[in-house]
Length: 173
Image 1: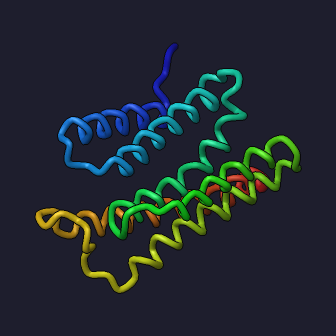
Image 2: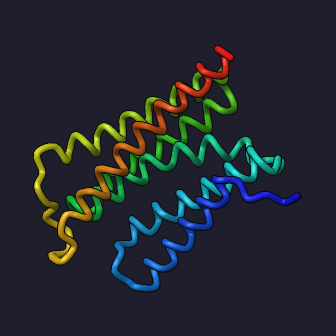
């Protein structure tokens, strides 16, 4: 029987929300790219973990490593300042993950994923400490952008921690 696992459902919801935000024209492009990348990652997880589609196992960790830098770049571009060419170094994060996938033991990639998620989530939360409102947010948005970025920072940290907790729980039975 065909099933719809949670990651596939999340992919559909994120794709719908991203398309709706794009159609309204009020959401900044970097945030739309982040939403699209999250939808794609959810679809890849569903295809790999639940439907066993070949080839997605190699794509899943590298695509996962794209999400935290994309979140940071979207945060900077929408709430802090225009992007500069100095932001290109963030592309080295998934590049190192690709290198680790091919040339390093499995635990290097697993450890790298955890560190990247924790670091970027922490960086977003750290930059929001003591902030009452975001200067570049629309005036009518109120506290929503601040809450959104806090949730994204927390979600990155929780995701990184789950990548540690789940294998430990599986090892413990």
